[in-house]
Length: 272
Image (cartoon, rainbow, N blue to C red):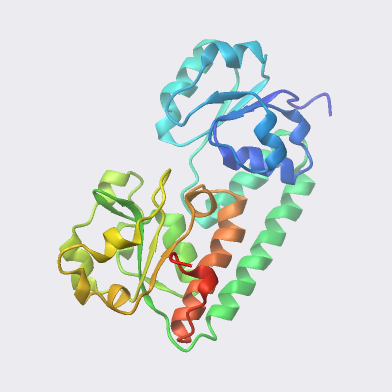
């Protein structure tokens, strides 16, 4: 595969995870400091956070391709381009776009066949969850809390996964807003829409259930009153890659099933 990139720096985890799933982890020479999947990738040199990078360390790795994610990494990408490196920045914000990213990464490294097989398998798994969700006796109203102060509602792919899993997001009109500040809601907004489930994922810090319960007026919210407050770790739901389509979706479906069927299981409770 000498005609394709062999020394790849990944500035976020989604592309790292994808390359390893394609059997091409050996091409990854540098990763984000937030990388946790797969475990073996954690031994690679760490060259970036999310909005900053160690350019000298990247240059020392002599990459022939750098992969980034989102407009938030535009400045990093521009600097690397100025330094002469080929850069591909993805901006996937929906489930179809995540699948497209996987296919494009495969094409970039000459493994389009493997990428197509991986994306097709993920699509089948998603369809299976969607079909199972259709059999639920009830679709709970869901507030996905991406951040606590200010309150930020879930981004597009998260809202889509909630729907696939069997829930109804309470702020569907905000899902297309790409920036967090465009998805800020007030505590009163949440109370008015009265979610039956709160799924929180505070990027980079643990969810504090007691803080959610203590918000003024939230004792009237069905999710708080009935004890349906859950956490999904941000690594499994807020990174738009294979993990969100598998583990993140699985956890969401477990929660929706438990709530819809009235059988909350200890394994999915934040206080378990």
